[in-house]
Image (cartoon, rainbow, N blue to C red; front, side):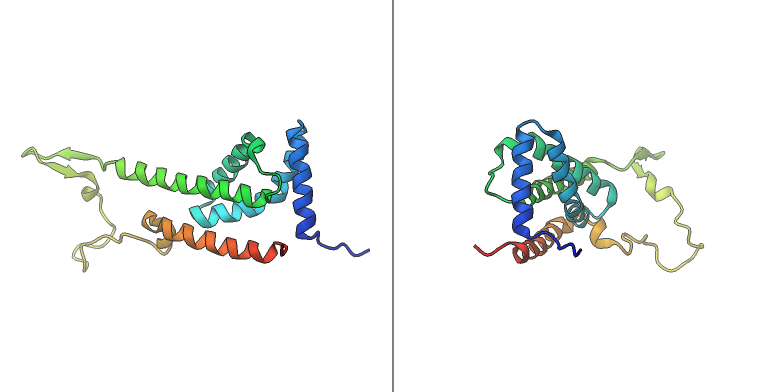
Length: 174
């Protein structure tokens, strides 16, 4: 027997049923929603955060928030789109929070004999042989776009635009 992939309409209808069952107290129904959408939410979160740990946290928090606010979900809407938006918003908040924490965290310093502060990072040897050309330390690695929080807005816009285009291709024409 050939198994056909369920249509988008079928999955939206089954999401709506799972939401109704969850609101009626059936926790198993919400597990079905998590299993159905967690992979795509993880992909979105990973593209936005750039690392596995933060992406997993975003997924967990997105589904927790979705469960807590499920009564506010408009049943005629697509659950997948709703939970992706929750994940994207949380990922943005998470990146802002990390950026703020990083900027508030000052590098340790100590006083020199004349009372001036000296950056302790300047005392760490960089591993180059004495007299090597260039006194600057490299500031980024090969993963610069992921590592640089300054690009987070552009990264978010790109990921969300790409995701929206993909979703519009899957949605039935109304």
